[in-house]
Image (cartoon, rainbow, N blue to C red):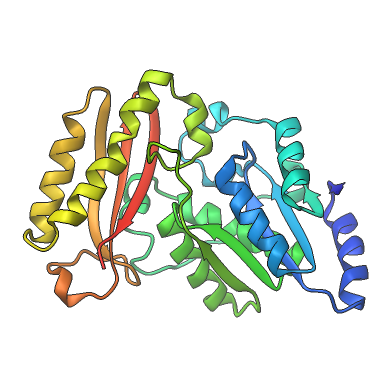
Length: 280
């Protein structure tokens, strides 16, 4: 496994593989890796000749400076996990390497980035599009892998690829969960043991809502989920919305959409967690 820190060095290394007509897969990450990331890397390594993983904590997608400051950085552990899971190349650039000058591009995603995460984290998805498009230009992958936990981000990346006419296949990988159902996240490292136990209630309630979905409207399901989670000590729902999985717009009836997803953001103490569940 090689560690590369410059775009030039990465391009030179990957060119050797391209000349041999080998396929290149890519997993962009911000480090603090866990089993969810490992699943992405394993699938990438299995489906491509070369697996590239980037580790870069992107400042432009943080609208909260404290969140950026406290984001966990675990380089040594990350490298060990990546070697174990089949990564061939780690691209670990500096901020100056990615942004030699400020990125002033503004993307237009229509309504995709105006709801849910976009509503509560203004500018977040523009920052995601900035860094992912830059990374794609450096790696030029055949396939890129993203976790479905960040459901809205996946939709944004697909739309960005469409707009920029990039020749990369975006692969969504199902959520990986702890044994108690808590969606794996780098932010989980900031939870105490008691908070982790409380946070597991998020998925339990989401599952319960799917069992009620034949009898309740999306509005009633929304009230149920928010009420149940807010009754758990230390949990506070920021939003829960049942949306069409393609447009991300609210739906009034589960029967009128064949791709209905409930998306949620919850504060567990000071840590913000997101999750989602499919209804049909």
